[in-house]
Image (cartoon, rainbow, N blue to C red; front, side, top):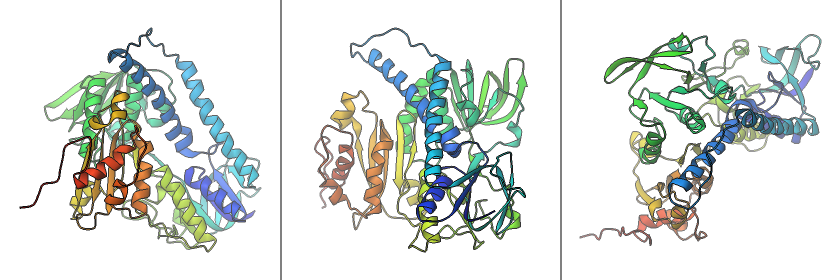
Length: 477
């Protein structure tokens, strides 16, 4: 069996590459070891977690309406776990089924199998799919590797117990433990910790560094940290490591080491969320000319070609940031390169979102990056305490922040924390991608009352012309 393009992996990068290549007239075969398309993002990540976060946010808002004196009261909320689990699975099945139909309509041959490269033009398939050729081998002109990533599991935390979870098992929602330890204060741990806290678990978070969401702008993290302190009843331990986990009767015993010494605590379940690593083993890359970079990702050029001229790579396996929308963008670049169209993966802006409550979103330059790279910048911050829309929602705890060049006033980066931050960051990404300056953004009329106004209001802060806050520029001597 021969195909023009072999795509290994059916996630956002893989199916996007397969579909776009088929649209361009190529003969495409997509190999995915899961029986359903969508990859980790759809099946065990982005989509199910955001569905559960939607439920958690709704529970939070109902509680807020009652507590903040809006005159709305209701009986206590009852969580029907079976129905919640079934609704989430239906959502995943619907979206994955849609991808399967799109593959058929595009005549993309999908094979459910585990693929291993035999050399730079051949892949060997292992599985039970009837579409696997008799000799189990497919030759190809080019291949796109989109094998994604997997959770990092430190050796000290590898415990064979149904009570020790990775993110995938946590999203199965088999039960709501009375107490849950989240190991890792990154976005995965905080998102899932929020879900389980709203569903009734007593959640504790342990983070090795001295702050939640390491590497994220501290101005954005502070409002979230305050809300998490209240939600988790101040059970967040920073500068603390889990030295050991032991499966005991009806629980997991965790040995913690922190600034105040060591202690041992027992939990009903433990979620390990200390990061993800690219899937580069088990797929026969050693039989090709593909090389890894110093961080363990596949080394790629600006057109997504690896060091093997027949093989390209996209998504998590191709480097940071490990985000689904970056994978889809790289798929576009890869297919454009294969079809000899102009292709260059250089972009000014790759937005990131943490779907906690409040949400955090940022794009472009951050203060930490600017300081590390000695880049001159100024900031303009607009507090949502001055936003009528934020107050009408009972959520004035956010802020919008721009970084810009002191001389040219060109926008360099944006950070937002607050309700719907992930929906707002797209405009900031466009502004950076098009080289917009502060004045242009400030003169762009936004509808009132909306949270989108805070983007232009923050730009006004840069010139001392913000209406709802008093912060004029200082007059020079």
